[in-house]
Image 1: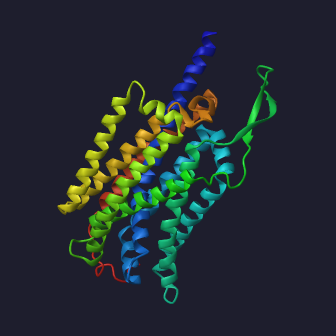
Image 2 (image 1 turned 180 degrees about the horizontal axis):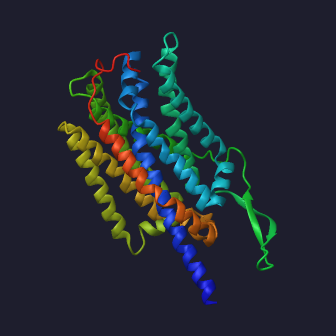
Image 3 (image 1 turned 180 degrees about the vertical axis):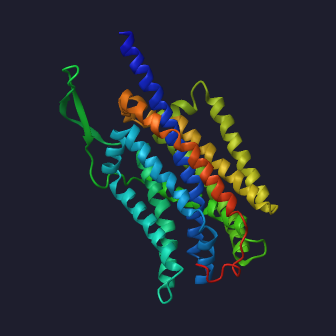
Length: 361
């Protein structure tokens, strides 16, 4: 009996550990590649192809490294929470497929744009459109996940060691069940958030006075206000439709959530004030802090679920022996990746002007 209790306790500890690492990996992807995607959305409104090329050149040193976090997050989901991985690619096949196609289209455009002559404009538009499509459908997928997966019990599988039978859950919805007013809104919200991050990024990457810097400065001021409005709308809507969120936000620890929101507003204020003062890199860091705080709040609100209303962390996790092996071999890669990303950013930290990267992409 004690042995069984120990196995349950170890499984719970390991599954919670990977749940936290999964949150961290998604956060790194959203924070780092979100700025790249937002810069691409800005490129939709660029006045000429040289400007799009300059924007692409500004991120040429590390955009592919940023996307690595999405690949690793998918690997963690597959290795630690396989039932979530399997059901997600049933329920969210269309939005995830479109988001991945957009990321691929954007990557191909990066490689072809610099070499193209007659088709250079085409690849510039592919880069910009891919940057818009990817965050929109990723946001749609997130909103649909928060609303839970439609599942039902299928055939029972026998567990050899016990002789008992356990039902196998499988996807029970239709191809378009992910489409709801809330999921469409979270798609729009993701585009707004990426656009703000992209504006902050471009201000930090281009020399003050440069045409791209000046246009991005006005863009960022606009999207700062849109982002604040989007946060309020999302919080109110979530409170209205998610009982599990409302119960936490207005429960005995309501003051913790209120304090957290005050801290978020403080970070947003610091980002906007530093942006107005021309402290561009500092403004970018404060802005990324807002993203980190909101993501942590969402993850904490979902606890103990990994998919609200569908699976708790423990119920979705692999058995203890599989998680132990996965933990032994994979955990060490996380600090290595963090150091690698930081080194990339440090090496390619210099500022640009549109003219300085003319024809380089």
